[in-house]
Amino acid sequence: MTFAPTLALTTVPARSEPAAQAFVFLHGILGSGANWRGFAKRLLASERACTAGSEGWLVDLRMHGRSLHLAPPHTVSACAEDLAQLQSARARRVHAVLGHSFGGKVALAYAAAHPEGLEHVIVVDSNPGPSAAGSETTERVLELLRVAPPRFASREAFTAHLVGAGLEPGVVAWLAMNLVARDDGLAFRLDLTAIEALLADYLRVDLFSFVEAPPPAFAGRIVVVAGGRSPTLDPSARARVLAASARDPGRVALEIVPGAGHWVHVDAPDALHQVVCRHLDA
Image 1 (spheres, rainbow, N blue to C red):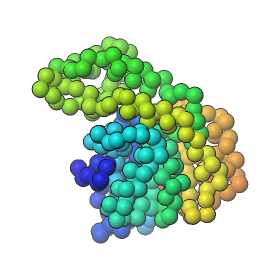
Image 2 (cartoon, one colour):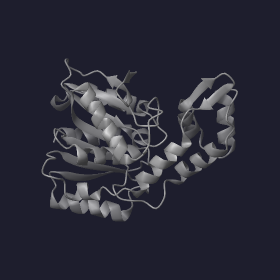
Image 3 (cartoon, helix red, strand yellow):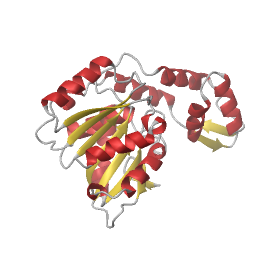
């Protein structure tokens, strides 16, 4: 694990050394960079010229993973500036950013504020515009974590508690990645007040202006990927992305992954891999 001035990250080595650029992967709310490890390794190991010298950065966004104890404000914009600080500290060009859900909006905010050198912005099941509420699963998870015991005797006890409250075992296994050992048992390490602040800002912020009219300084391509079964990118949002793509097909694209829900990289990893590779090679 490597620490920048603010953010923790795990790196995926470039296929050809020395690495000349970075491909950044950003997780969703309550996640961590590790969520994208398998996908990133497969993508960066593939034989394509555009990623040959790309080092993967699996970033823990602020107040997630090991990027804890950062000062407020906890906003999408602050996350984007954290990423810019990371890029500056590591002195490497970021040529591609892929973000899922909350991380997708951070990717757009970063690209809007720091477009120079970026070639690819890939937004996976994230609405660029404002939303009335988070997903039912996210809202339910936060509600249950708020009233959960502060300590658990074991991972099994944590799992039994949340599965018993109605969460899917797969969701609970993912949440359990945030358990840490304390003297008196296992604790959930994330600051829920900070997480709720980040989620509230994610729902509020509108970054459609960047998607619909990318600034001249951004010479890259925006790809918005939606899970076919996911309601995150609602019909109105899909129509706006499609309209932007029709106006400027070389710079904006919408991709629907049939059969996938919100967790596109889990539900349909092969299909998402193909979508990303197609646009990287375009």
